[in-house]
Length: 399
Image 1 (cartoon, one colour):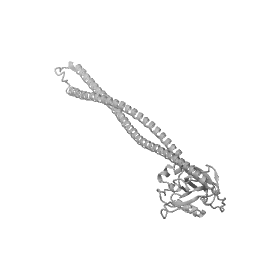
Image 2 (cartoon, helix red, strand yellow):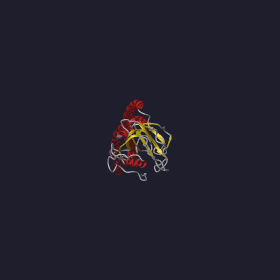
Image 3 (cartoon, helix red, strand yellow):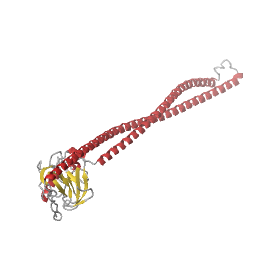
Image 4 (spheres, one colour):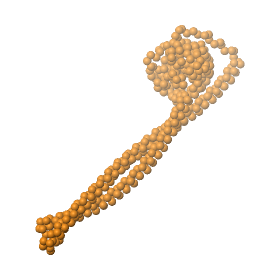
């Protein structure tokens, strides 16, 4: 009777709220992270601009030093030329004994002057060599220092460019995650609102149905004799289970789907000893979902549900026996459904948990519960497809 959508909407509102809160926290953290990354990118850009400006200054200084170096090279060429001239002049003076400058003087009295000139020439050579060496060393040192600083600056620029690219990539990734989480948050809020509205509509419909049933019952009671007494207490064999539908009037079995569907009215009992885990779920017609975990017999530890047009008579945490009335079945528009629930008891069936139910088909879990009811004396449900959809877990009890 319950569609796939109904099964999905049976999830706990508390679980949906927790998911929404978690996604809102993720959105806040991502927005904060993106803001921090943006500040980091801005800082990197400013640092990059500063270093790039410094590099321009260095490149300008390199150009100036290159101009100065060219001047030094010209001065070096001139000094070399002068050095050659002085060397030739000194050589000519030494080899001929006569200076080109003093060629007009040839007597012995000119010897001291010649020696003086040679001394001057020698000093000029030394001065020219020293000046040349100083210029070469100064130019080489300046050029080496500037090249080193230029290399370091370019390396810094490459590191800043890489860091900038990484930060931009992180922002793109975080924005993509933020978009997905925001979309998921919107979907969760929309689904939660839809579930709440559906539950409110179903609760209102159930209340109207119960009121109409109460009026009809009151009118019928005024015209009919008192109802027959409840069936006497039943004592199943040790480890066995009792027929939970033995007190239902006009009981009619219907289809097998996630569980087994029935119509009728009257009390529905627990199938065996157990403890009540839940009584309501907004995802089911009528809002009733009585789930109890069995504590004896072959299905000890498994969870049974009875849902839809039932007015609960038990509370969560209550111990039950085969003689405990779980609730009263009223003649509502949906009838009832009973079968195996998942361990959470939050409105999800075992058939839905294992992906066997697609809307109207008979499942392996529903057929297994129908066999259990037949073994206890109740009429079994009607198969919609043979074999039923899916298989049972290993070691699941058979009947």
